[in-house]
Length: 160
Image (cartoon, rainbow, N blue to C red; front, side, top):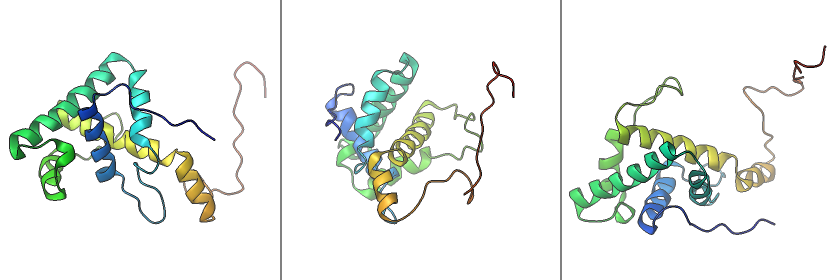
C-alpha cells in the first residue's frame, strides 16, 4: 500500500493547471490509465520540488504563463477552459522534437514540450499503469518483441 501524496510545491492555481494539462496530454486510452488516474501531477509536484532551480523555474513560469494566456484570451484560469479554448492555447505551443536534446528555444514551447514528456513518463511508470498492463495480460518489453533476450551489463572494474 502506498501513502497518499499531497500537493505542496506548486500554488493551488499552478497545480490545477498541471492537472488540466495531465487530463489533456495523457488521457486514459486503450484500457490504460491517464495521468490523473496515475496521479502523475502529484508525482511531478514532488519531483519538481526536489529538482534543480532551473527546472523549478521552467515549471512555475510555464504554468503561470499558461494561466496568464488563459486570462488574457478568455478571462478564466487555464484549468477552467473547455477543450476548444485549451486547444487554441496549446496547439501553437506543441512542437515536434526529433531528438530529446532538441529543446525549443521559446520558453513556453520548451515548457509544454517538457511537461508533455514528464506527464507521459510519470503515467507510464506508475503503479496504476503496471496494474492495468498486468490485468490485460501485457508484459513490459523494451523495443520490439524482445522476449527471451538477456542483457548482461559490463562491470568496468571486473574482467569478463
